[in-house]
Length: 159
Image 1: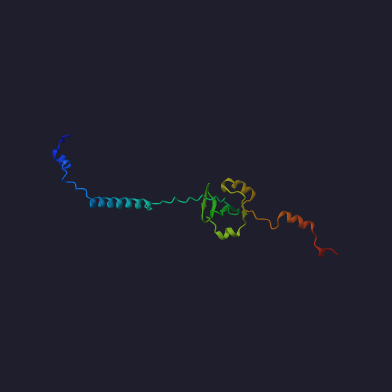
Image 2 (image 1 turned 135 degrees about the vertical axis):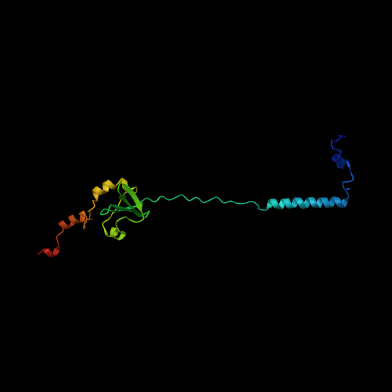
């Protein structure tokens, strides 16, 4: 037998009077208690007690190309996709929701050209100035129609 350093702590372990005597009623009570505890633990595992976190939905952006209308009389480009007006202010390109120095109604009443490019107007502006100067006006009749009219003579002139 090992002698403990603190004898008051070893006495209760050696003293058999503190433990209850095993009898059939105590054994049954212990078995019922053990069964109740194990059943409760089993039910806790069976229940969905965790937290479910759904991952965020990521939607890939759809790239819509820029689509411009050019108003040569004012040197203003309108971006239909972004609904912004692009123009030069001094030496700097500006994009704003409204044009500066001209009303939207005046722009809409002026000649316009649909642009074929889909990137920044500043890359094409020098070419557009040559092709469509500030005093540019669309021809009333397309070139191919003018040639057709020269060849055709009206029936009422023939006699």
